Amino acid sequence: MTADQYGQLTRGAAVLSRDRHGDKVLRLADGRVLKLFRRKRRFSSSMFRPYARRFADAASKLAQLNIPAVRVHDVRRVSHIQRDVVIYDFLPGRTLREAATEDAKLMEPMARFLAQLHDGGVYFRAIHLGNVLVLPDGRLGLIDLSEARFRRGPLPVGLRVRNFKPLLRYPQDIAALQSFGLERFLDCYLAASSLSAARGMVLRRQITEK
Image (cartoon, rainbow, N blue to C red; front, side):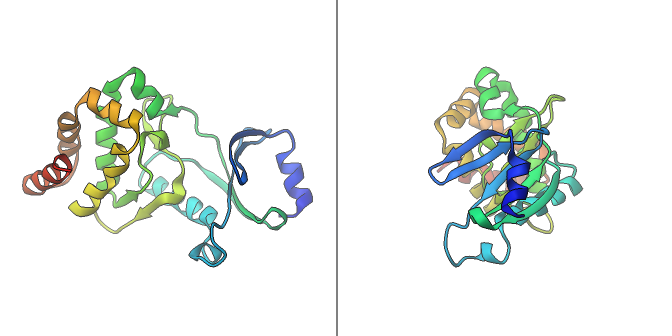
């Protein structure tokens, strides 16, 4: 994408997120969203498979699994600002982090959603509540998709346990889990998962003993 094309595309856009390196997420004038990715190191795997492409691939795979996520329109390289960009439809809703602050009972569908991801072979490293949206129809959806990884078949117990760590990292997420009850959350997760009773006991023990 040339500098002129980028300028035309982003004219009138609203900045939704930025950091010390510049803009990260823009809401375009036509309502779509443009997310920018920079290469954090000069030589890295992102040279061959940019994070923007990973984002788009993850969106496609999640759609195949009937897991709500954004619909991607385009992936481009913007050389003059040294960024890769992905353009996608805006996904309406509010973060579960915000919603669960008002209603801790929303952690029950979150537990079922997490089980659905794990049974579908999805390892979403950024599964904290700020990256889960409560959609207008009540379903949960994912954003920040470049952190998603996919396996054939359900995740093993070890990866499932590891994937609980982001939920226990941020104060607001911890508060929501504590309000709902971690044991209750695990009950809901295990009831919705494909794990056997024995493997479920292993998962529960490893999470609650940490």
